[in-house]
Amino acid sequence: MSLVLIADDDVSVRAELKSALEKAGHRVVEAATARNTLLEAQDHDPDLILLDISLPDMPALQLLEELRSEAALARVPIMMMAADADAELLTRTFRWDIVDFVHKPLKLDLLLAKIGAHTRLSQAYKFSRKLSKEMFMSRIDRLEIEMKANEEDLTEAERHFTWMQPKAPQVDGYRLEVLYRPHGRLGGDFYDFVWLDRDRLAIVVGDISGHGIQGAILQAMARKLVSLALRQENGDLHKAIAFANRELTNDLPPGSFAAVAIGVLNTETHAWKHVRCGVPYPLLVRGRESESIVTPGGPLGLSRKEDWHTTVGEYGTIIEPEQHVLVMSDGIIEVFMDDEKKEQFDVEGVTKAIKETPTGDSFISTIVDHAELEARADDDATIICISRV
Image (cartoon, rainbow, N blue to C red):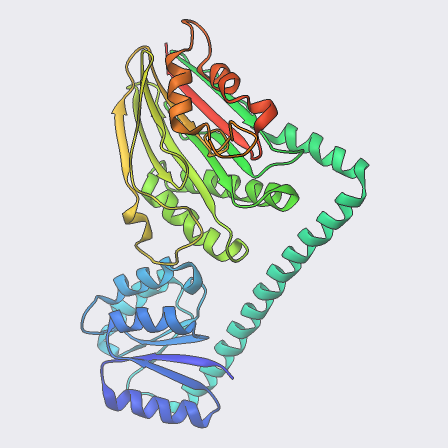
C-alpha cells in the first residue's frame, strides 16, 4: 500500500483528495504549509508528494529546492497542483524534476490514474535500492569470510590497498609529509590530495569507524565521496561536508560514521582554511611551539538534519614561512604508553615531540619515535604535516 503526502492549504481540497485516495487503496498524510510538508516528508518517507504550487509560507521553488536537498527525498516523485494562472511558475518547477502536474479544479479519475502509476514506480525504486544495499553488505560479509580463509587473496588485497593510497604532491614553497600506518594489513583511515584548480589544493584526513576488511572498503568509498564533494562544490567546505554527510548517512551501515578533517591550501596566497568533523584538533606550529585549533564539528554519516553542516566551525589563517599545520587521525594520540593501558600518548605527547624535534628533522618522525608507534599502536594512524618553507 503506497503512502501519498497531500500538501495544500485548502482544507476542502485535502479532504476531497484524502477521501478519493483512501478509497483507491492509498494511505494519506496531510500538510497545510511548506514547513509542515518538509517535516511530514522527513518523518514518513512518502511514495509520492502531491504539492500545491502556492503554499502560504514559502515560495514553491524554495520548497522544491529544500525537498531535493534531502538525500532521502531526492528521488521521491512530486506532482504539482496549479491553476492555469500559474503556468509560467509551473514551467520553472520542472528544473527540480517534478514528475507530473494537474490543473485545478481537479479531475479525480485522471489524477488517481497518474498517482497509481507514479507510486508503483516509486515503490519499485525503493525496493531496488534496498535490495542493492543488502546485496552490497552481503558481498562485504562474504568477502571478509573468504579473505580470512585465503591468505593468498589477503596478500593480494594488501598489495592493491597500498598501491591505491595517494602520493603527496610536490608544491613549490611547501613540504608535504604523510604518515599512513594501518593497524594490521588493511585499515579504516584514509587521506587524499585533491587539486581544485591550479592554485588550490584540498587535503583530507579521515577515519572510518571499524577495522579490517569492511573498514578498508568503506574508507575507499568515503575517500572518493569526499573528493567528489570537494570538486562538485568547488572547495566550499560547508557545502562539501553537507553533500558528503547526506550521502554517507544513506550509504554507511547503521552506526558507522566517518570522522574527517578537510582543508584547502591556496598555494599562491598561502591562505589555509579547514573544517574538522570528529578527528582530533589540527595543530598550528610556529617554530617548535604548537597550539590546537579548536573548532566544533561531529563525524559525517550520523545526522540526517538538513542544517547539520551549520554546526561545524571553519578555521582560516595565512601560513607564514617556517609555519606548519598538522592534521591527524586519533590513532597517534590514543597509543597507550604503558602495558596496563592507563596512560595515552595524547595531544600532550604530540606537542612535546614537536618541541623536541631537532632543527631540520621531521616532526612526524619524532612523533612516531616518541609514541613508540611500531610497538604500541592498536589503531590505524595517519598524520599529514603541511610546512611552508
